[in-house]
Amino acid sequence: MLLRKRLHDSQAMTSFGMMCLAVGIVMQRFIHPPTDFWQGFVSGFSGTLIGVSIVFNLRGLTLWRKEQGRE
Picture 1: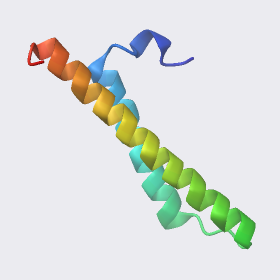
Picture 2 (picture 1 turned 135 degrees about the vertical axis):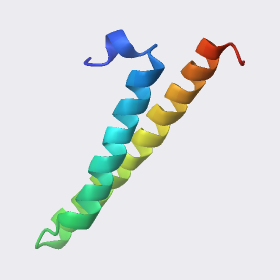
Picture 3 (picture 1 turned 45 degrees about the vertical axis):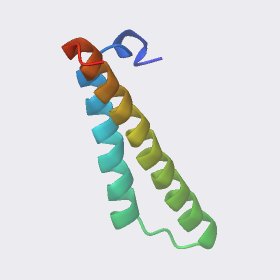
Picture 4 (picture 1 turned 30 degrees about the vertical axis):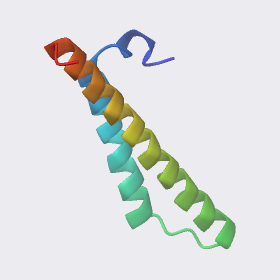
């Protein structure tokens, strides 16, 4: 687990979420495989990365709100 030590760090969660978002968008835009199987695989994987980015960004936001005492 690469993020085990940083699961309670809001900045790390948000940074990882934004990295997943950027990679997911770049995959959709610039990777064009020749066969239908690989097109579906790239589309599914980029969708998964975008979904993971939503989860990590929301986790970072809730941690940040806890750190600020706004909960």
